[in-house]
Length: 291
Image (cartoon, rainbow, N blue to C red; front, side, top):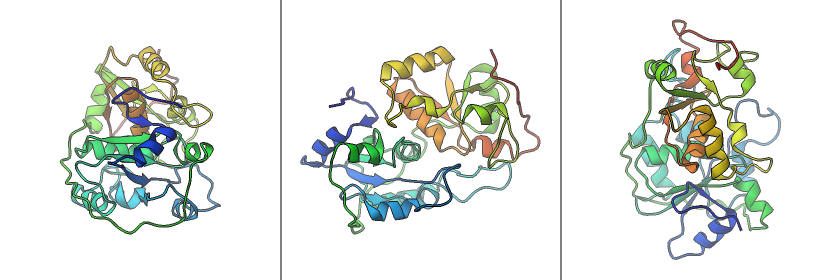
């Protein structure tokens, strides 16, 4: 059975099974989402949830529950942080309470589940973990699933936003000069070879490429904490304060989750490349990763 150090933001399928049978079971949030580049055909995330999910899990719509509407060009990006009151109301509807643990999961590599983890932590919830490997790991362990949708619950969670650090575009620019700014997108997008959704290709000048795909193994589970620590320290984390961005602030949360699992703190740039690239006054770099 995979186990994690006390205080780890991750939980294994076997550990979650035990937690659900305990006297204080966690709230389960299913955060499956079709990220940029996913096939347009096939079932939606909500349809996948209705076909099967962990017993008792509530479906969380990332666009509706974990983000505000897209901002104007240069303002907020594609997935701005949600209004705290609306976010809190959604979480309470799913049964989230201040003193009740929460476990979030998605289809596998935890890209969207990490957004829910980061937001809950940012909003002041102290006991949130991510199911390592997500729904795929639960199925691989032979654990039960259901198509039964639970009734709405009534939790008492009240957000106190700002408990995790963030930085705006000006701060990200400064961070790239004086600290370590990690670009969590694919290497192709970082180098400017392709840009599937945002206005301009390339990266924030001075940022270092660190694709989130390298945080996990072929099975969608996170690499061991020691390997993650070695990866990020080789990029300069630990020696320099670290901030992270991605396309719209979603997969950057996955990077911060991996950094936390490795024992390294990091700051999120929520607007990320979707905000930066839509502001014509912001410079764009398309060269290879700086040495």
